[in-house]
Image 1 (tube, one colour):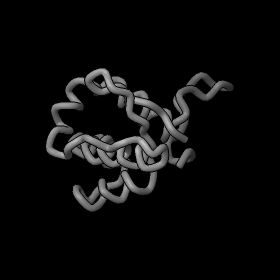
Image 2: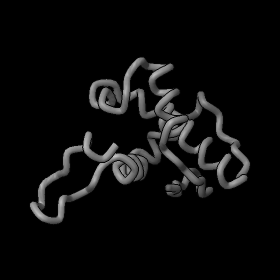
Image 3: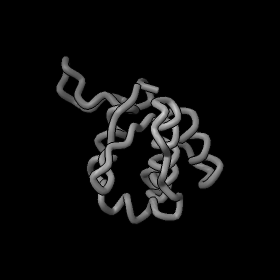
Image 4: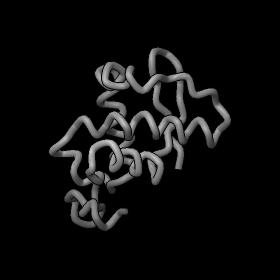
Length: 105
């Protein structure tokens, strides 16, 4: 699944999956379930998610890793929505409650 994220007026494809999760674990030693305790882990998720999206679509990947914390300041809410779409069901239609995120991986 591909989504799009807009950074400084440019639309980038983003694909969250193995590549982003691998770098999260390599850089911070955590899985996506550890992000609640280490929000810095969203940096590799965004960076490598966009890298994967660009690779899949053939779009030029022109972001620098060191710029990602500042980019996240601008796109935090948009990225949170994308992250949720990749990893969690937003609402369980039958109960109206948040779904168990571990069931959706």
